[in-house]
Length: 322
Image (cartoon, helix red, strand yellow):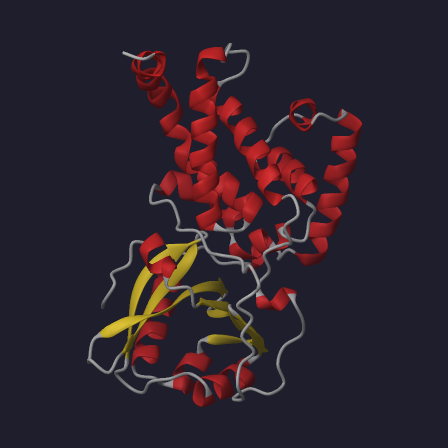
């Protein structure tokens, strides 16, 4: 047996038993940092590989959880070097005034991606606010180190001294970065109280009526379920729409299909209701079309983001046909 094989036999079982319980929350952490569920999955794998290689040198001066977060944060900061932010269309410019006309597609932009919601109800409660799509989009406005400071301090409740040690800086610098990050977020982040929790009976009824209207391609019915100032955006299209009238004109002029040509499958993303949309093809089967993430405000939807990245259907464990 080689030295590497001997090490795997002695280290791997203990390492996995202590480290595996944190895999899901580390995915959420990397996602907050990166804005991409696919990149986050890669960085979690890298985190565990780095940790496994260093486990025999782990002295226990911190918890395994803290140690893993240190490795993951460092890996994310390295990955973010030289990268631009991951926006939503609303972060690139104003709304379109020409609903119904051809959309501007920007395939070169590294768009923000949604994150499947943890199924454990307790985990949903603790992570919902810090993984809302609007919050993740707001984080993208922060430089990587400020982003790390805000997440570690305000989401994970690390002490300033712990963050300073991780980032190899002073406590005063951490506090200053946190102050700047909070000020920036106040300008771009939504008010938490304006968002309705997804599990209420009122929300379930609203979602059922939306699904029914969409599957009947009842544009008036869809628009009636939106707030007056609803936002409708569709990465990788930079074009986005503001208000019921603009959304209605877009759905009438640009959205394909007719009554009976869509099927919708419910899921959750970023702590919010989400829907996998399937469009009838020439073979009469229903194929993936887009994944919608919906924000509920009061008795209506205030924000709909349609992601046209079909890889997300696998990520969200949605069927390949409906």
